[in-house]
Image 1 (cartoon, rainbow, N blue to C red):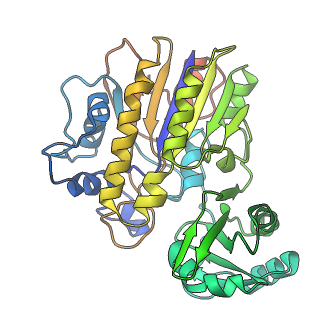
Image 2 (image 1 turned 90 degrees about the vertical axis):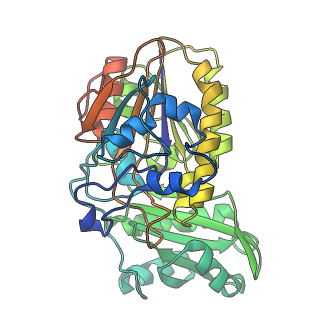
Length: 393
């Protein structure tokens, strides 16, 4: 038996009832992405349409003309509500594995100085580097603005966003990735005292006017508050495999193997390889597909977002062929990031839940009360102790 969970990062399907509390009233990531493609009456995502992505979206009270419901979806479909406070990567992924965050992570104010003076002082004392930037801003923009100053030595660029995050950027020729990771590890210890969800290393290269962030990003997440479904599965003898940034999000906790592949294409290739391995035991393969969020959602690029989903859909053709009747495929998301919405931040939205059991007919799963239902579904599938949520199947 194998379960494959694909998280299409930031694929929201409509504003949650409390979206206005987050400044996200009316957000709808999937709608914005579908409207970006004007050459066809329907999106060119045959696999996702057949699985029931349009059916899931219609549960949030809006049918999308270019991503419509189909009469007989091959997967069971639902829409999930986030119970946790927040709309960030860590909160979303933790809830998918059964951990609800009753209290949101600490958010830094957007204006300079975003970081408390005592945090900045502790960081500079611990690392020996001056922290410049110190405000909420696009990473590519602040690297272009301050990259030259950082390259003169003795400084690192620190910035935040609407998420609970401290991002630290440095040119790889001045501070190599491994050295930057050590800086971030020290920052992680300091940020624990402020309940900051993630510290992110953001190496870049190039020259002024042409700086480029490299694939050597690494996330340093706050420790989990307890065991997730990953831990429960390991205890039950199930091999748990993380692909992409899953290992970083969970601090490697509950993972038997971790493949920190960067970008959707390498992650999808890894999935194909893993599905073709000879199995020695039951497996969970847990994958984050980050490009929709990082490259297109935050940059408000609906056309690029559309193409990224199209690439995922094309890969699904081969993935689905490798599944047997004893396997299960779950496709979902961790939050929204509407490329048609003002600003550059995540949006508080429903996320889709598509569950394919080869050889079985799909059905409506309705509106689910929590992302934890993914964890409960995995627990039921593998017959291990549950840790939150209601099984969807």
